[in-house]
Amino acid sequence: MATDAQIPPQIETVPPRRTPLLAPWWHTLILVVVLLGVSLNGTRAVHSLAEGGKIPQYLGTMTLEWLLVGFIWLGVRKRMSMRDLIGGRWATLEDFFLDIVYAGVFWMGAMLVLGLSAKAMHLDQAGKIESMRKQIGFLAPGSNLELAVWFCLSWTAGFCEEIIFRGYLQRQFAAMGRSAVVGILLSAIVFGASHGYEGAARMFLIAIFGLMFSLLAHWRKSLRPGMIAHAFHDSLSGAILRLLR
Image (cartoon, rainbow, N blue to C red; front, side):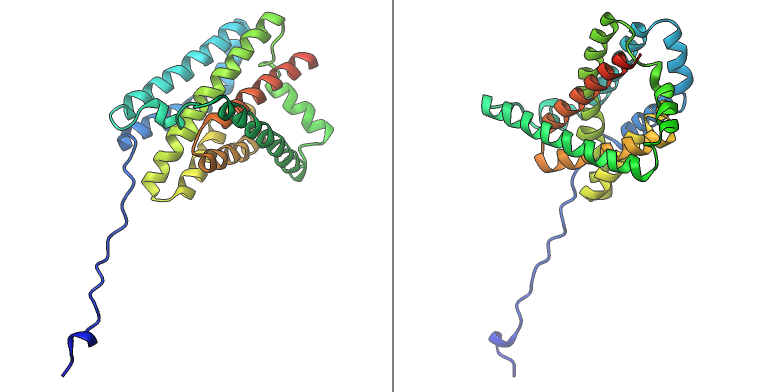
């Protein structure tokens, strides 16, 4: 006859807790559709805007990005604050400088990875470099005033796009797929796909760039280093394009 000591204890299994969505699924669908729609129509629309001058084009892009951030705020406001979405704020001056260091190291590593990726895709050939320069050359600032507004656009993009892709989409996709990997990969894909005006080859490189930004955000649990690196990269790109004109 079995004794109580011989009866194995009953182990109560607790189902894994599901991470709640940041916003309803339809909210995310609308955002993705808008991003992809702007991308698909991007080349024609941006070229059309360029005919009216670079500054209206830059201002229009900034307006769109802030509207998208506002749309995200409307979706997440009942679940978290924008500060929490970003990853909090700097508590000390040391935290601020530490994020600058992380951003700088990340940017140098990202440039190495992108350079090797471009070489593997044979995008470093003279003809392809010239083709890409012409493809995005219409975006280049043509005067010091345009360059100044470009810098404003770059810092807007650094702030807004990190919220859109890494703050919102990455975490939302992770919650939907119940996996951080799903969030990282899907947000990177959408990031690349949203830059249709730069051509297929650069879209792929931008997706790789987005993947690295996603990994940085996941590791640091903050968008701040990515915002700094993103804004710096875009600012430097505009300055280089200005010099090459």
